[in-house]
Length: 239
Image (cartoon, rainbow, N blue to C red; front, side):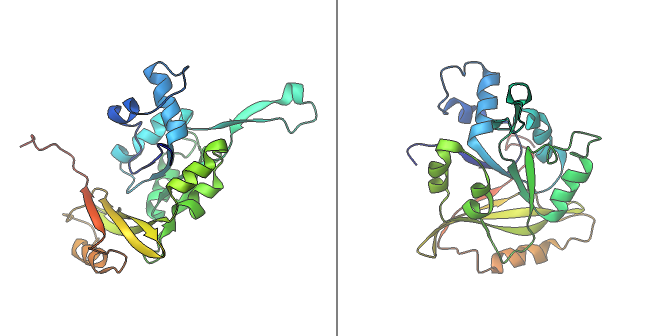
């Protein structure tokens, strides 16, 4: 709405250069470090993480110390000495329970890295019901404080839902995200994004069965499906 640029990230990184270059910044935001921090804080509204491998979660570690919107807490009677800055509302990290638990237990566990959920920076949204989609505004954005940008952001994601399907990747579950734009209770546009997946050489995950579940799901509507994105580890130039 009105040229507002906000993003849902499907891999926790600091943003591609071309995205940073096309973002509008305040006048004080000059250096690349300032731009990256401003972009992360103000333009990425949530993270949908497909699986917990480090190439998808290391970015959360790198950006976590600057990934917040601040408010002044002066609830104490002696406000002159008690004012402190703290995160206004946490950003959501969304994924399968297995993915969220792996991140919480093995990364943000107060041993490898601070528990940023406890500090109020992040909040985990575990979602395992492939039949029930996540409503981006109702389930995520309405719980966040974006100040004067709130109405614009809500308008941008109005009637947008996300289905999540299990897929296979090595010995763990990965995820396919189905993003749908609704109008008058009808799907008008869809994009399907596969986090890393493939037929595993080991493990109990049944790749063929998971693919069958996705393509037989009534949530996937071929006449409205505009694009399918597949993650790849290498460019076309790699033999």
